[in-house]
Amino acid sequence: MNASVFAVLVTLLMGLAWPVAGAGLERYPTKPLRIVVPFAPGGSNDLVGRVVAQKLNEAWGQPAIIDNRPGAGSTIGIEIVVRAAPDGYTLLTTSGGIASSVTLYRLSFNPVTDLAPVVLMAQMPYLLAVHPSVPAKSTQELIILAKAKPGQLIYASSGTGTSTHLTVEMFKSMAKVDMLHVPYKGGGPAVAALVSGEVQVIFNPVTAILPQARAGRVRPLAVSSAKRAEIVPELPTVAESGLPGFEVIAWYNMFAPAGTPRSIIKRINAEINRMLQQPDVRKHFLALGVVPLGGTPEALGNYLKFEIARWAKVIKDTGIKFE
Image (cartoon, rainbow, N blue to C red; front, side, top):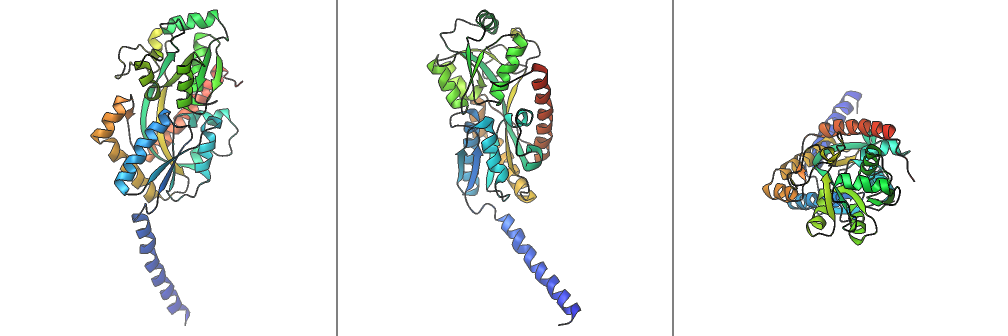
């Protein structure tokens, strides 16, 4: 076989191979998906992740399985996804803590380069709440109490270095108070600790704690957003309660391992954007205080970089240190 004939044959064979590869991507998914949630069950990340998993299952006819991997401020679960095969079958649903971890830890990965943004799914404010045994009925009364008892009030977080931890640390810095930190492996266990009286104070996303507040098991004081939340319009913001400029929003996102084919990223993005517009999903989320968002992978990538820079400044300015 001469060289020219061989070249033509190779070209033909390569041309035959391309449709097969493309068809494989078009058939995605052909097996179950794993959605890693780097927190314990019961928290806001878990609740949002389970809604998304259910809808992906309904849309694609493949199980979407939630894999809770709590610990180390969510970095254990994130690293699992970073190390996973970039084939679209391992995904990450996490919160804004992914941005602050860059400054707080010596990570073995870089979320900007080692993860592929898929979509910014939702956001919600945090709720400042106390155990009913705490005499404070407002944010100002809590600050006065904390100043009178430095280091005696105990607050819970969903883990050291998570957004709930940093939110309280920012609150402490701005209010010039001292409280003792007890980290848990997720928002669910942290809320349970508040309900049981193990701790006295919490900042937690509205989704996980509002049912306990409505049942009278915890006392809500304020929301962390710049404006009052539609789901609890009677509650003031922390900013209007004596700490002007205080604003923190929980945000929920989806990432895939870096190197995941662009066609798969686009398909997941399109499906989640579609589901976020479904009336039942919007109704369910809004009833929990979650605001559905959506958007492009690029928008999430840009927002991640913005949040990394924002929390790096907060951590530096407040001098946040771990126990």
